Amino acid sequence: MSYIQHKSEESLEDYLETILILSKRLSVVRSIDVATELSYSKPSVSIAMKNLRNREYITVSEEGYLRLTDEGRRIAESVYERHTLLTDWLVHLGVDPAVASRDACKMEHDITPESYEAMKKCILTILGRD
Image (cartoon, rainbow, N blue to C red; front, side):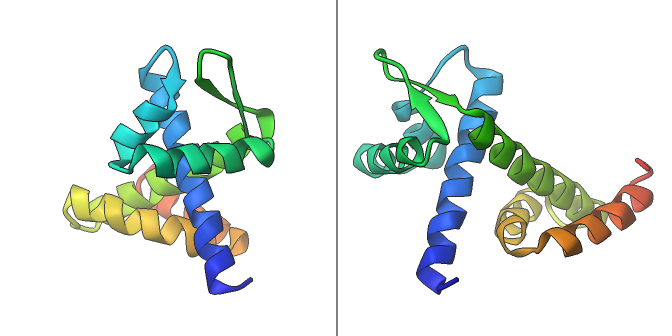
């Protein structure tokens, strides 16, 4: 995968994760909510939502409400789990929570499933969640 393809997939994952997080806080999620949450421009988010819709990761109602498809939800939940676990681990190691969250956001996209599962097993033991 090229660098540009990788960055595109990372961006896609961030959007899906954001829609998931917002759907836990809001009764409905709109593009403007995503733009506000990520501090992105509305046109940028609009293009991203079109791409997510074309890849069948989201649906958009006539009212403009965003909803994750089953596949979109699967990806979003996977990214969110990685983000949460890595953030918790870094905080446990003494990293400032804001820094830990930013670093986890970078790590969550680059780690292979095999390495993540190995780390997850170890981290859960360290955090006493096994």
